[in-house]
Image 1 (tube, helix red, strand yellow):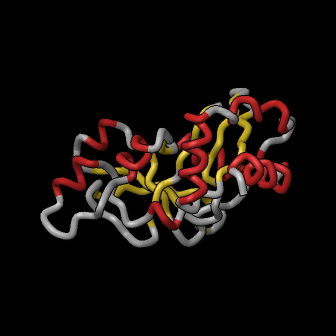
Image 2: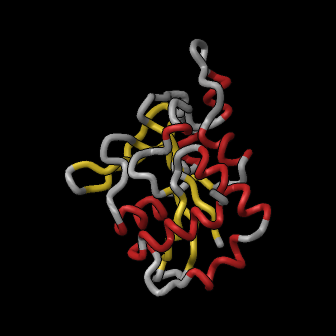
Length: 173
């Protein structure tokens, strides 16, 4: 199935994610090679991208909307510095390296929280999010998950990685 058709089907199946937005409002923005390639990457790695509308900021985003952290983007540490700093068992890549390579932004706490107000995500997994420099400079990184009906954000060493922790991305339209 072509990526635009797949995205259109998901858009129609989940109208709660983009209230007051029509497909015609966005299709011309998506139908550009640089955007469609990023969306294709998000889909191929299990992200199930869909349009999210931030009404407060009047901002359209394509976000990973898979119920759990995208399966093909797990077992990665936070960034290249952390990956290269591991003495043993370094992962093949990192969340920030993969996001940058595919022109996708790593969600920050604000976008992750917005996503969680629309539906529940990461009920059994967790996702790295964009970490403030002040935390990263001390060796840490932030990840989020939803448990007990609440969004939690935690810290870990940026060089850590787990089979149930991946990363969620977005593209601004």
